[in-house]
Length: 113
Image (cartoon, rainbow, N blue to C red; front, side):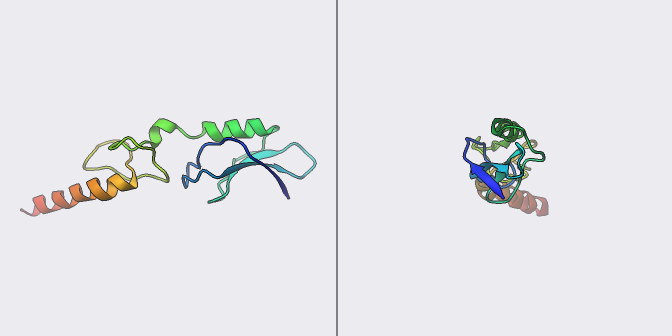
């Protein structure tokens, strides 16, 4: 069984969900962890205090790398390859669907001509 506590945690780096909880195992020991309630991603080890679990969860996400390289907005989930619009970074689903895919289709049509 787990005891659940609520803390301010960053979104899940795997699914982008913001419903993350810090829990304590009911083993008789001070064993705390952070877990995404959507996809089940969990901290890889147990910590001696809830704040250590929170700090570990929050530091594993590099916020700058999770911004769309086209529009600059935060990316939820994995992100998309922005080529041929940009050579580096990742783009959000919106930019992928409205800008990147159109550029790829245009590049294919231009290559045929």
